[in-house]
Image (cartoon, rainbow, N blue to C red; front, side, top):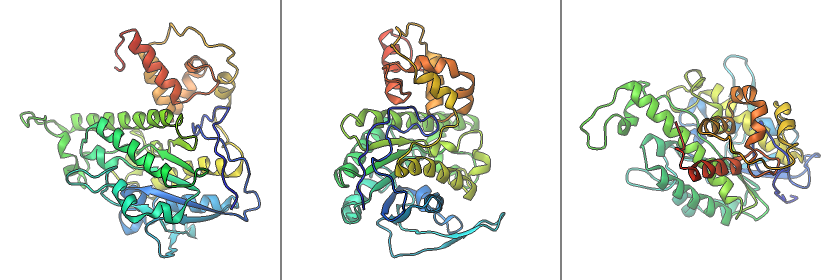
Length: 369
């Protein structure tokens, strides 16, 4: 197949917010096979038979409908091509089910959890399959266990380094955020036991406190994922962040999570459609369409970086929410968003978020609410 030449985008993609531009050559004729490996935990695996194919089936269907010749690859192969039928609409399609998703796995092994990193090392699936695109959505089990955030981020860095070292230089890695969770649902309540008491076990927390704590943990992790990818793109030109997991938020998780952690097929469809938007634009040689073009126009006409003396903590909060796909922030802060281009490159991304944090810290201002 023709190889990708991933470059950084010179324009804002407000809907996907990926720093990777499209490859230099498009696949308009659909003659080249594009190998995609989806790596992750149970949310990638599918967890139960009712949700076989997870969001992956919608990636496969969406990209093939765009004319792409897709080969889903992974450590779990065998050529199994199940058929998905939507119970509500009757829609039915077959899909390539090969993947590298493992239920219950953390980013890297620690007591009580197996790790995706070790699995990739042991199976050698990256070296054998040589995927053109890798998607990575991992970290939910780290959050469930209330695992140390800094350790999780360091493990993610190690995992990303391993993936990028074992795929072709002109292949691309897209790292996704993770979905929101409902820790007080009956089916998963016990999973979040580490949030229900203080470290010394002397204080027990009620459900409302647990809900807030888990929500904050997911938010902090997703922000860390975005910041890490922005930092690492100075070393690796073929890494991007995708906000596919963040399509399931606190606002819609009740209807999109079947047990409080794992999406139902409606949730998987939403995640899959975000992946198709991002990957389809990348593969097709054109950026994905943005639904906030007015914001893009505002942010891409900045000629000189301002002094930013009016940047406050509430701006950090709003910008973080914007980067995580909060459309309400985009609509209510359209004119203000142009001021968040702190590096003056005409692109709103997590590089600007990192600069904003540094700016606030330099003023000895608290970074958070």
